[in-house]
Image (cartoon, rainbow, N blue to C red; front, side, top):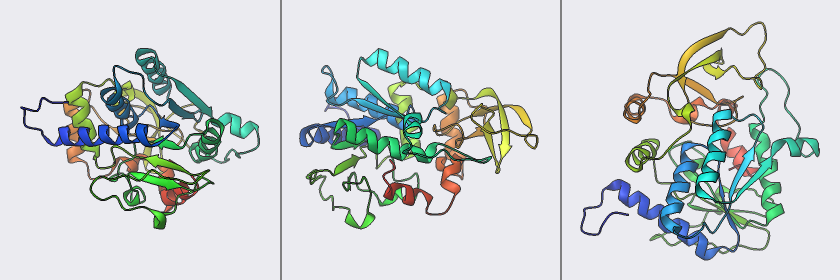
Length: 303
């Protein structure tokens, strides 16, 4: 936090709000968790949690729902971060949900495990008895996420009802829930993508290398560049090219597209975002299934 004698800028205000929310979670809930994807938003949450709770340990574990089709760079970063922070990590495996017959693997050329994360997440919440899950969603990402409150109540089946959202006046957050319910909490809900990047620059936060321009084999599919990874079903119609790209968002390799880029520094990335006319979720193939794809997944228990 900045000294009181200094003038707070907008990043100071966003930081202070997020830290306040994280501390509210610790005070109001018995068994919270922080959902960690290895993406820039959840990495920012970990940094904010350090400011909120150090020199003590976090009052919650980090929870990663692993599709098995994650970028290797993301998993490498996750393991490095856990080693650096000494915090507890819980990993829920989508493959376990498939093996147990709780989730059915998609088939076809554009098959993805991304939607299957919901089953694994709900099972993980039930297994460990989490009553609150902190996530890095922001209101500027997508229309359904713009409907969220900062404290978003989910019913005993993990389902989200946009009509049951509670008012949040004067930064008063109501964490009271019935048995079996849980709350998803979004401390950086009021941040934009550009805010996150400016904060990462100011705080000198380390990120996975895929956020920066690098050379990679890619396939042009459905109007976007997809990583030519083993999980992607590549056939004779696909042409593999070697290009300079980076990723604006991190998710399952089968649904997360890259963008043409030569941005190797934070200032270059910030300049790209300022000039972009497409949101970062525009690089997520799973959001293009229908106009209400995200909202339907959230009603089923998605992040």
